[in-house]
Length: 155
Image (cartoon, rainbow, N blue to C red; front, top):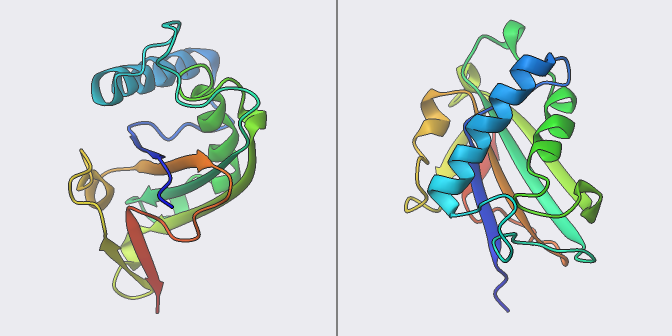
């Protein structure tokens, strides 16, 4: 049985430590991406992908091209990013009951891991190799075990 999976490459990687001005800037950038790429418009009935009481799973891969010493802690990225997706993608981030998160430090690519792309038709997929971004997949339970976008092989 095939399941609809919402696929997002977030152009922002927010941090829990951001100030209010940066938070609003991140939210506007993410909203523009969701509107222009996926047609999701906040406040427009019927554009939300998942409604209460849907139970959701989410997978996030944080691509970090910066030196490891300047990488954001993944746990500081998760909460603000999923908060920012509220009202655009789902009603409430409490709907996400299963979560998997990975930070890939791109300076280690080919030494510690290799990436195989499974969905080259996804807009902006090449950004993951060049920019700081988060690849996010969200779907209804039951969880899809493997990503539909990337396969990571640890060496």
